[in-house]
Image (cartoon, rainbow, N blue to C red):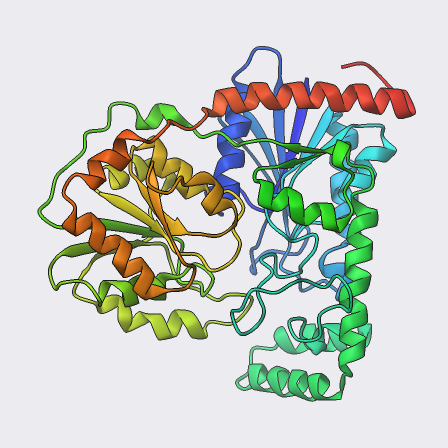
Amino acid sequence: MRILQVVHGFPPGANGGTETYVRDLAAAQAATADDEVAVFTRHCNENSRDLAIRTWTDAAVDVVSVNNTFHSCESYESSYANPAIEQVAADFLDRWHPDVVHLQHLTCLSTGIPRQAAKRRIPVVMTLNDYWLICHRGQLMDLDGQRCAGPWDNGCARCLPAGALASTTAFRSTRTLQSLPMPGVSVVIGAAARVWDAATPPDRIREATLARLEHMRSAVADVQFFLAPSATLAAEFARFGLPDDRVLRCDQGISTGQFEGIRRTTSTRLRIGFAGGLQPTKGCDILIDAVEHLPRGSVAVDALGNGGSYHGDDRFGKAMQSRLGHAAIRRLGSVSHERMPAVLADLDVLVVPSTWIENAPFIIREAFAAHVPVIASDLGGMAEMVHDGVDGLLFRPGDSVALAAVLRRLIDEPTLLSTLRAGITTPMSIEEDAAQLREVYVRAGAETRRRLGGRQF
């Protein structure tokens, strides 16, 4: 079987949970004697022309990456339904002739890709990795960092910048300004955006978000099966309108081999890990607030991940910089996928204090593979993965005092940590995941043949 994975980024250029998972999955699928695997993805290189193609081989997997800086977008709609990228994908489908297309994420690519596959009678499977089909920010969080109900009834009036609804001429003018190497251009662009925002009625913004929602429903109409890594996501997408018989609950695997035989270290302090970057929805500030409620010198914190902007807003990351000098923090920065087993072996507990309703965080699977208990927000997929009092502990989302109380238990109850460690079940391996997915692909192929006819695998 020829399997095409489609994802918005791929290592080493992108190392988020979904990207790392797809790399491991593709390698596991390609390692079998019966299957060939390719990945269609995106990179962003400001020094290269838009739509330029890069190709390479990663662990017997052919990777094809299209450059998308968004400078060529001429409307808000083209930021998610990009005809040029759709054509690049269609050309690759014609060259490579996959037997199945597995959509992992379409952001930064184009929602036209599943239709191109369907036109060629190629079965399509899609994993629901977040809320991007529903929410253009992907996390159902508003500009104030509060959880949002979504655009269901009246659309969203705040989170979509009104400047995104500018005319094609305005989009082109902005690109021209961006290309000029002169001081003050960013100020001009910012001023123009503020004028446009002030002049755009909220109703028009709501209409744009509702139109996007309807577009997404239409764009995925050709998907045979949707894979939901959590019941939380499955429930939200039932509201989106996906039929029950096309949504499958599927846990995701992890490359467990690299965690075998790791040797744990010991410490007189409680060693806490945080991995998620300096984004407001990941809750690094909540963890630091909680640490300040604990006895001085009782804990050490490894804050893993980089800063950067969140949907173009870098204020949170900048505000956190001074706090990262806290005496309890002993290590900062990003960690490669290959180094994670050694890093986790040097921790006593991982804290996942996210405030958004996460799906099935990859880092929790990594922690459990390393036999590290997890403290997580009692929310969404996190609460599904972490069993309170068994393999970890849960706390009230966004409450640093509640998190401090949970951490204090680990300090004050000497046997609790070992009890939680003993309760951890090793996650499903990536090889088991690959085998499980192959069965789904075969089902999707059979369904496609039943509905449309077509070639056999």
